[in-house]
Image (cartoon, rainbow, N blue to C red; front, side):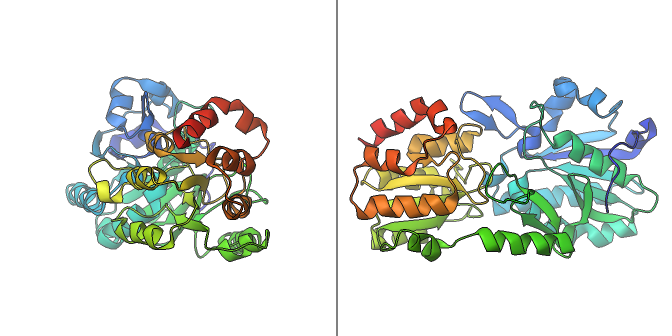
Amino acid sequence: MRIDLSTPIKNQWWKNTYLYSAGGTVSADFTDSGLTGGNLDHILLNGRHDFANRLQGCRILEYGTIYSGLSENITRRDLAKITTDLSDAVLENLDCQIMVACGTDAFKQIARKTHKRLNQECIRRNIKMTLLAANRPLHLENTDGWDNFRTCLIGGHLPDMEPGVYGGFHGDLIKADEIDYLPFVDSYPFYDTEMHLDSENSSQFSDRKALINEFSLDEIEALKLGNIETDQILVLEACHTRNSLEKIDKEIESKNPKVVVLRLYHSGTACTHENKPLANWAHLVKKWREKGIIFFGVTNNGEPTDLTLYETSTALREAGVIPGFDLLPKVAIAKASYAAIKGMKPADCIDFVLPASKMVSNNKDKVDALKVLYS
């Protein structure tokens, strides 16, 4: 369902609206290490980001924090708590709207688990539950957070919207059990893109999937660009992995590559949960970097990767992941493979793989620090 975001918000809407925070960028807090998981309680209570004016007289009936971490660090236990707490909220109410702010990296998981457990009960109790997220935090001028808040709030009060569980993103309300990721929003998928969410049943979704498949090169195809061997490089999916990295650790040990390319979340992050050391990518990178393996990081959808915005991305960089900046994923794999097969030293490898771009030159200090780390 497409939502007209210019629709005026009515004050009476807030009288039966409950807002819950389940972590992610939309409720993030600043730290010296970058953005970390926060909660909307702080934003609402302290009047941060002009929240009330942005949403035209925000008078939320009740709000609370279910999960306050970043979505890439969310665990199965956290997911279970989110659905349990939301279940309690549903069972305590009738004829209302429940808005849930969470993170894009776990959005599909939260939406589908919530739908499976609560959709029928929401229908029975005439409750419209809308989940929202954001690619960029609320303090930035180009944040999509406010539009996503409006998508959910306005959509949840449309007379023709049926009760149930939905996701609200960029002006679209999507049934929660249909939500899937689209890795780009523009016609050219590997530059200046962002995470997008759409219904897997829409024609737009299938059209974009076809386009991304046309432009994406898998590991073998990318390596063929340089006509080189594949045993010197390992490409690992670091996103969507929050469980034990034991198998990946053993894979690195058995293959003993010279270079590893990590495919990260669209925000340049991966799980670095300090309370789950066996699932912490930063720990894994540090272990093998100290044994001489060079790590590069690119986003899974081709967004620029600088590893500075979030505490999770900062942890990866400090462990030794070299950000690809505006390097395209397929080019990163091909160039890193060439550097590995030629036996380049770490500093030379870094200079060879990274592009001669303004983004790289603007981050020369970070690149130099990584060269020292590898020396």
